[in-house]
Image (cartoon, rainbow, N blue to C red; front, side):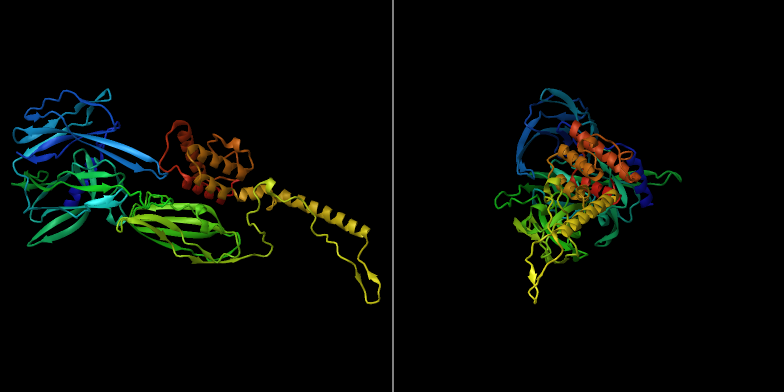
Amino acid sequence: MIRFVLASLAALFALAPRAAAAQADGVQVSLSSALVKLGEPVGIFVRVEGDVTVRFGTFPDVTGLEFSDPVRSGTQRSVSYDTRGRPVVKQRTTYQIRVRPEGLGTYTIPPIPIEVDGALRSYPDEPMVLEVVADIEASRLLLFERESVPEVIYEGEPYTLDLRFGWDRTRNFADAELQLPWWDRQDGVIELEAPASQRGAYRVPVRPGRQEAEVEDLGDVRRGPQSFKVFRLRRRFVATRPGTVEFGRSLFRFYETVGRSGGVFSSGQTRALVAPIEPFSIEVRPVPEEGRPIEWTGAVGDLSVSREVLRRDVDLGDVVELEVRWTGDGNLEFFDAPDLGRVDAFRGFRVLAVDDEKRPDERVVTYDLVPLDPKLDAIPPVPLPVFDTREERYVSLETEPVPIRVTVPEGAADDPFGPEDESDLPPDAIRDIVARPSERSATGVVSQGPGAAAGAIALVLALAGWIGLRRAVRRRGDPASVEERRRRGALGRLAADARGAGGPAELSRALELFLARRTGEPEEAWIGRGHLRDFVDVEVSDSLESEYARLRADLDRAVFGGEGTADLGPNRLVRFGRAAAQEGLR
């Protein structure tokens, strides 16, 4: 019965659009609590982002409610730093409007007219609903509690909010909902994706707004002599800037069936019971500047690292896949992975590609490394500077070194990649003719080799044979030619160009240069091409064609329209390049 009701509620509220948590122009308006006991204080909070001029219009007339004049309750300024160390200043001003209800009942408050820098609008988008009741205590019949949260955290440090709610097993369930005034209405906070083990199988309505939340069924929970049917709502957040994260009074509203049922499809009359969780807050401190390493890329938390290499015995020029895995309680999704091309210890390796996979409970980065020196005997540690929130200081988190053996195959060149440009090729030279003094035999007769004419004839024949062989090989595609070396090195060049790109325009050029190197066409020929087919000499799969079309469209929108997407970055280009190379794009 309970599962059916919760599933039905989920389907009902999934059809309704989600209420906007914040306006696009940075103004938030919300009630301090959607349900209060008669006589308790209640108010409307107006939060405005930025250093702007704010004027309030005429308040709506709501029978039974009195509104005070808006009072400026405070201004909060914060300074944070982006990954490049540039300061970002943010300001938020809060206004409070006290509301006095005359009696019990449900009051609908229309949007409030507010003028921000000369632009007049009404906030919020939907009316606010305030319910005033005589008593909201139901501690003997309901369970509503939360796990403790830290009082103080650092910017970038994640935290988990764990709420448990339920009802006495002897009560007749009719309906249930959560009233969470802070739901999707907090500033400077990003919700993280929960691990699969923490995702709920059921949904429950959340007020205010037409929303729903996933919850877990914990079954029966004993509290003394009573047995409660309990569910859990767990959400994980990360604070993106200093300040205070506030949680207003949270309510669990349970409806039970009372009286006799009026028929098969009638549940009779219902009575509402309410259990509260009192307001609380979390202080968010800035990550300190003192002691911050230059190489720090934003990692915050209590993290650990491990590494794995499946293949340790490689030939010079072969690829070694180094998988680095970070786990723990930290902002795993938000820091930049170490760029091994900038780490001195990896000077003996070439980084071909980087695959960065972000998961709810771990961060896995796979580096494609090519050893360039046969004397290498280990993959060095991968360092990651982290601000450790437990020790409150910066630490260097490093992997264990990986022993490897590099073998030089017979006939291998000094540089397994070869020069990339014609200008890097060594000048033509004849190196096989070496002048040696003649040798005198035991009889005193000078022993000489073939005469000068014979040597010249042999040299001409050798050169002619070499030229003919080279022409035959080139007709089949010479693997040592400049073009082929450029083609083989295109993926590594793409990874390097994409990592060093300063924006969408440079990412777009990196893609065009990669396609030019793979196909032999001029770089300019790939500007604006929306598809691969008809321009390459191989069969292109539907998946590769579709990914290229999406990638090209996203790049063009970002370059010419300023409409960037969340996944438009170096890793996406490298993934496309690897797929194109696997299909033999040329």
